[in-house]
Amino acid sequence: MTAQRFDDPHRLATAKIVVGVDGSEGSWTAVRWAAQFAAERGRELEILHGMDLVGTSSVLGDYEVVVPAVIDAVREQGENVIARAERLARSIAPGARISTRMTTDTGRQLLIEHSAEAYAVVIGATGSAGTLTHLGSTLLAVTAHAHGTVVVVRTDAGGTMRDSGPVVLGVDGSPIGESAIAAAFTEAAERGAELVAVHAWSDWDSGRFAGRTTLPEVDLDSVERAILAERLAGWQEKFPQVRVARKVEVSAPAPHLLSWSKVAQLLVVGSRGRGGFAGMLLGSTSNTLVQHAACPVMVVHPHDDQRGSGHRR
Image (cartoon, rainbow, N blue to C red; front, side):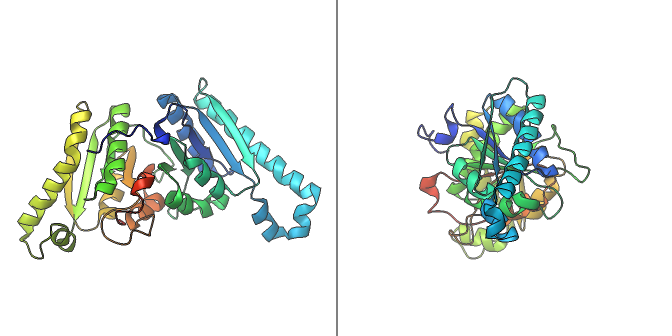
């Protein structure tokens, strides 16, 4: 277990939960989730909306955008979205501290910038493709490039968000995943939920990771179970109240985690895992989950001083 960081801006008492809104159904779902999250964590909720005047100009043409009437219409629409989001948030969490911000930037720029000091950034998604109007083009960019924690609020096929079931953690074998493990234990403790730690392996992954080229399958399974136990040991000591179930699976992790998302109240994964290229900030597993899971997905980026190390999952 890594040492506690006292310089982490995401854990300061002033760190806010930030939610992006664009007027889509997915963003209203995100506001509901974020408002409840903020109330439970005792943190301020900040609602952000980017008007994206540059993007509007590419659709309407530069002349139309500089016309005051067009700018006023875009601003009025943004103000309506922000006002509705604030009313919705206050209805969910009447006692929460809530602030709003609207700029001419894109939602993508706004959320990535604010993620540097946020406790978490929350965005919405609906449907199997995970895309929505303005936020749709933003979802993967924010998930990949934000700092700290990003929560993509997804629902099941019936549009329901579960408040019961386990917190499910995808565990790779790398030190870079420590931030995700810490977040998962914290969430399970806060929710009084069981933590299911899922670690998937393949012959190729395990043989390379263990520094050996050939091992019987039973030995590979033992190696991976030992890796999982080692990764969790310190955190189980820190959170003795959290009941942990360990699951070691063969083959790619995404299908197993997608299956767990049908009963989980939250999935937690790192932004990258072992295998692949360090330059890819969002790994294939995280990418798949934020687009197809049946529950909210928390993607936890490593601390900035770890971004140059580790690999993709």
